[in-house]
Length: 449
Image (cartoon, rainbow, N blue to C red; front, side, top):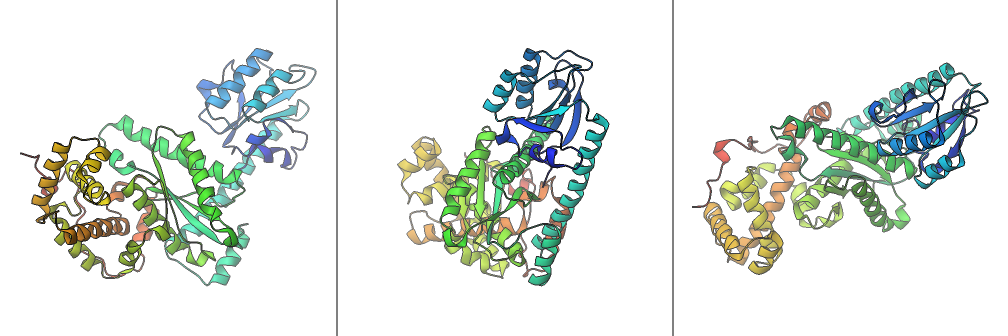
């Protein structure tokens, strides 16, 4: 919903500003205007600024302008506005425009006759107004996600008032960093804040991607997930998979050091079903992470897991998990997670120890030792095919229960208000599922002897 570089010349009073280069990057959102007074801008920007270059207090050579373009791209600046006229910068050099075009970086040209005080005031007011509207839209959608549903006609009317087009079917897409909350538990504050910064960057990139694709819906934050409403064509639903796979690849390329997973709901006809669609997408992304080899999961791929998720008596599911998994059930310490990952791979590969060892990058003797330890903890023999079937179902159910009760996300630093509302929704009776701290010794599994 943010103001973009391409929209700057269309703001009232700014019609004299012209878009000169990097039109393909015109959908970059503008966070705030900034007037550059120094030789370099790198030390003074944080990303998203629309940087104005006047040349009044500092001579701007062709080389310096190209330097500013490179710095702006490196530091994710929204765009450059270069002031031109007979007094200082006479014109924008062709080489600067060529560089900006090659980098898809927006450059706009503003005549000196257009007063900077007017320009910055108009842009700042537009950003503030857009933020207020954006907050209203996010509040509206958050209420729907958290189950405060009105009649479909009222929802449609409110969406229209906010400028949202809800006349197309849509899927909800949930994007998650694979180990976001495990890494948040790190006692290293630098790593903690670095991770928060990375998640904020991912939210920004996701919003830019939606904007480029002409999707006006904002990115929402719900616990550990980024949520997007993705309009689709019901007559060509098969294209949705390719579209989302392409979008996920673009996000991954922007943040190559992170591992991203996504889940998508079934197509929904209207916003009155947004709450259940979000649940579907979050269940799907949970299974994408659980299975690892597939980074995009659709809700209709969950198979029998959908039946488990529909069972209202969560306490019965929890009891089944505890009966099958023993002390591994709901345990989240590192050793338990390693053993459950080993068990999952072993079951997914139909009990083939050689393939399991290779998939885990461990020696076969190490695998045998882990499997023996698992048998001791669960109290069942893995050689029994019926036991393996029950274990596979128990692992599925455990992930569903974690999803519904947000045990993994209890330490979230984002979306706390949404979570509080979310947990107060009317639900079926919940099981008595303990939510231990990972360092709680009651859940610790002793190292192999």
